[in-house]
Length: 281
Length: 294
Image (cartoon, rainbow over all chains, first blue to last red; front, side, top):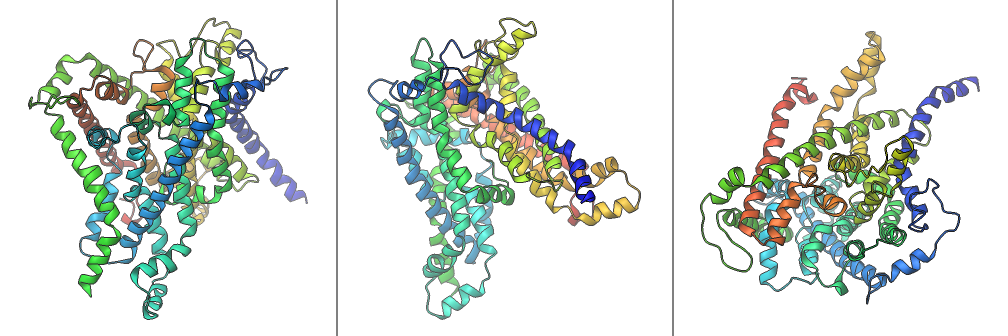
């Protein structure tokens, strides 16, 4: 009993430091919650929550952009998400299976090249890509954003899945083969069910990165009816002479909710994903 | 049998192969070619030799300006973020109660930090009417909007980057867990103090992870775009005119694709040089166990 107490006391300063850091970290977010319910005049008052919360900020903000409401912008973003996530998971798992399970000529070289592509700053390839999509007449469609996800989904995802697949004993493949399973059957029936947690990780990251990939959206989408939530927020901010901060902040707060929900539903996979591959969150 | 494996192997990785040739290698080579032309999207360019590069270094004040700002940003933001991440990771690594709760809270800013939403929030917090300026007014600094002041605008962006130390922290935590307990026990037997242990065990064993986070941070920060684009639009007085922002304006504002491609290749070379430099310096401070410490 007394030793337990002593341990608690020893940890007390650590807890105080951690709580202080947490307060500093979380303060802008709490302030954000409060500010989304304030009027412009109250914005700079010291209190976090206003006396008279303006829930109307959410209602008015939702339809603040003429002609299209945020229902449209969220729907648009989810359409992009659906295809991007599906493309990443399907193609990255195929590629990863190829690298992890099949020994073919030059596989090491290709894998090294795959890793190397992660190092190239996007600025170097974005201009010719834009020109290519321009010539294909894909500007102002979602294709330039969605289609690249079907081509391996990026080195990070393949690397993550390769690590997972390599940890599965090869004997499983061998016995499936003896039972007459094809290579694709081994991929689809044996390996994929076993790496489900890793596939979830890939899906989560693909979702979050697509959600935040403002640059691609900015480049390729230019009519308001096709805007994503991010583009709509920017339009919201730039189009008004007097910024309605309460409405802006309430809409931007809503825009992070999908990511936060995804994070809390799959926190474990999330943290593991970062820890095992050094992915950037 | 062997050729069958070759065919299936290549079939499985074919999505990557198509992507690599069509969406990476070909565009990269094309952009290298563009950088020696005066190509604009609307008219075919002609070969101008190294003109774009000469112009950059001799006759383009925006190039030098944006490069300088980007370097300042990187030099402050990356170490600050890593320092926070490392300190908090070390504290969290002491088997304490509620560790996963703290970890979640501290990770949250990293989760949302890259979004437009947070840029909007930052613009408000540090703006003229935001609570930071009101706080400063309380201690006697009146009418101080950090975002619209050329002397302080960049520091708000640095702060935003440092605020997102969570993902680096989680990588550090994973690294700390790998350090064998015996090393601490052995050094304690040898009479090493806690401080000594921190430097000779913790930091030494963690050095490869520090290098990893450092390089990851460098690559990301050199390309910083969204936050500057939304919060400050490069201003005031171009004080936050990031290199990626300048490149974007040249390419998609002025449609000077040739010149912008040259800018992109210079960025690639800078990032490659910074990475190579760090690897070169790393042999003086990074400890790799497998090489017996040398």
